[in-house]
Length: 245
Image 1: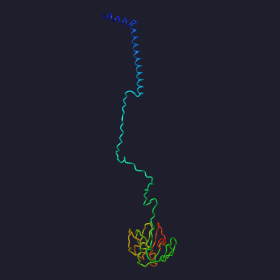
Image 2: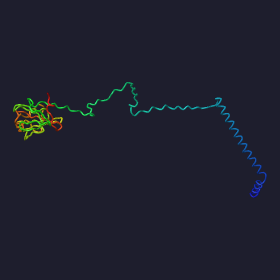
Image 3: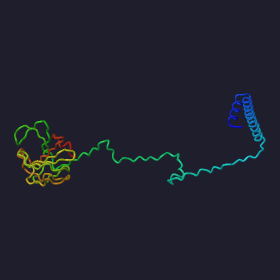
Image 4: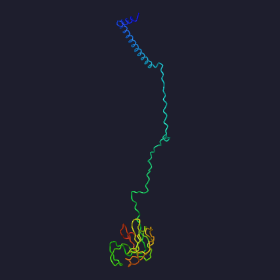
């Protein structure tokens, strides 16, 4: 049989009933195979489940042991130490008392004034009241206290302070003025020449300033005395109000 006859026979077969019969048989075989595979899988699944339920069969169970996680090593050993117990006692008062309370101003102690010379008062402080001046033969105010004392008697500082000035006044002669810690002043007039202190000196209470003289021209008509005056806040005051008894 040559190739031409074979081709015609295949063509005649495909166009005839034989082709459809073969096609049907192939489909039937494929369907039967699929049905058998499905039935087999279902049977196998049922058997497997029954085996598991009965506890039979060869099963391997592997137990996986997970090691405990190691504790983290602290970088700071002090953090691993046991925390101290909390005390229930009342905390101690750690308030530090202030040595000085600066909220309130501290007032300086008022200075104490002593008698600058030993003697009796002669002419007293008159303030704004006019009194007769025997030397000047007129009426005028007397802004100090005249203390009777012999010429040459030592005149002492009534209170500690700084010598503010040493001067020669036209009416009151040689005058020494002291300034004290509270800002007040004491004035010593009718002194002898060459007093014992100079401007700027610091003197203590009772320190010699000079001696009683007769340099005050406005009071030469009176007995020998020291003219002693005081100023507070820049105004003359009565020395008797400040001198210690």
